[in-house]
Structure formats: structure tokens, C-alpha cells
Amino acid sequence: MQPYVIGVDGGGTKTQAVAYSLTGEKLAMHTGGASNLANGYDSSVRHIDECIANVLQPGKLVRIALGIAGVKGGTFATDLVEHLETKHPGVKIELENDVVFAHRAMFKGGDGLLVSAGTGSIAIYKQNTADYHLLGGWGHLLGDQGSGYDLAIALYRYCTYCDDYQIDSPLVKQFYALYGYENSRDFVPFIYNSVKKDIAEAALYLAQAATAGDKMAQTLIENCAQTFAEYLICALQAREIKDLPVQFFGSVILKNEFYYPTIVTCFEQAGFTVLAKPEAIEITTAVLYETE
Image 1 (spheres, rainbow, N blue to C red):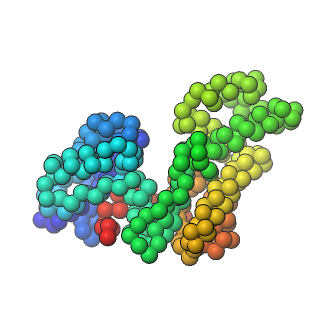
Image 2: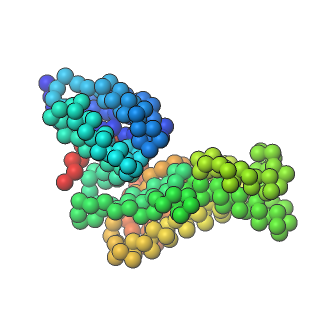
Image 3: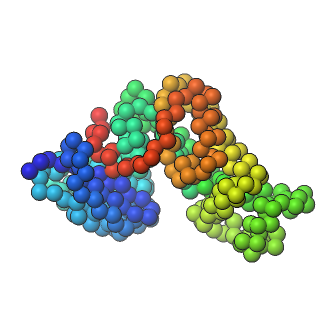
């Protein structure tokens, strides 16, 4: 019976556990409920346990590595590690923030800069040491440049601009028709009383409008991507970080035909090497690259 490891990728919508041989062969996979610890510790632990239980193998379990959203809050990390050590005695337990886990998987434990944008945005780099360093990730009130939320707010702001300056914009007209707005005043209560995720949904409309050929939608997306890139590049230059390979992650970057080439161009012009766009990303493979 061969030794094996288990990687667990947990977030706000689902948890996935995959068992691998030490040579990287996938042995079993199970997907379960959400496991963002900050949004419900008990249910998250239950889903993590369920996923691990469903991929256990006859051989010796050597290591369980987890990348879980929300591990930085309170005593969540310590509590979860203690729980897993009790449940799986003798097994090495590694728990990391989900973005660190993603970096470890995509760069195979090596150096590089990972830039991620979904509903929120963050970047993380590692260079010549075992330490990971975060850039951004401050949340929508303090940052989140280039995120889905940022794209949505750019659209809402453009609507207010068109109303104030009496600009006749097809992009705004269609947006109002879709959401049942008469003018920008109608969405103000929604903006100030809604959670980030709900506001960010307008980014999908913006992306669809851009794909359909709306030039202003394309410009808004490209401006957000450029602003995010410039923010990160300036932060890296301030730290004298250069010559790092760069990889991108997250639906906002990878699935947007106007965002992706814009941010790639910005980093290439700043002298960074951008790696090929990933076709398939299995974050759980991070378990194969043991921490130093």
C-alpha cells in the first residue's frame, strides 16, 4: 500500500479534497460544502472532515495540506489544526490562506508573483526565501483595485457621470433597462446597503457589454486592469522586487478578453516575465510541494 497525501481547497462556495500519490497521481476526489472559516467555523470544519473522509486511501496518509479562506481571523487556524491532528494522529497538517495555497500550486513551491482578481483582488509573491508576501487584499473599502467589485463601481460611477453631464450612453441605457432604474438616484440605496458580492454582480453586465462591442465598457475594464497593474508594479518597485515570473488567477482576469491582455501588457512593459495563461488549475496540487 503506497503512501499518499491529501490537498484541500476551501472557500466561500465549496470545498474540494484530492488524494495524490507522492508522485502526483490523482487517487480520489470529493467536493463538498463551503469552508470559509470566517463565515461559519463549525459548518466549515464539518465540510472539511467530510471531504477528507471521502478520499482516504488504504495506504499511509503522510500529509494533509489545506488552503482555506478566512484562516487569519481569531483562533480559527489553531483550532482547525488541533482538530485535524486529533482526528488524524501522526499525519503532518499544513494550513495556509487560500491565496498562499494557490501560489504554492501554480509555482510548484517556487518563486513568482501571483495576481488574483475575483470579487476582490490581491497579489502574493515569493522570492529567494520561504516567506510569502501579500500586496493589496485590503477589501473593497480600502483597496480591491481591479476586482469584480471595482469594475462594478466603475460602471455605477459612469452612470452618475452620464446623469450629471447629460450624456446619452447606450451602455447606461441598457443597464438601467436591465435593472429597472430610471436614473442613478434609483441605485444609490442599493450601493450603500448591499454587500460587496451583490454589488460586484454588475461586473458581469459590463463584461458582456464589452464583448458585444461597447467601446465605453471596454475602456472601463481596461482602465481598471491598468490601475491595478500600476499599483502592484509600483509596490514591487518600492520593494526592489524584479525579475519575478508572473501568473494570473481568478475569473475576472482570466475570463475577460479585455482585462487579461491589458494587465499582461502592463507587466511585460515593466520588465516582468508573464507565464503562459493556465488552461486548467488544480489548487489542491499544492500539497505535492512541501513547505520549507
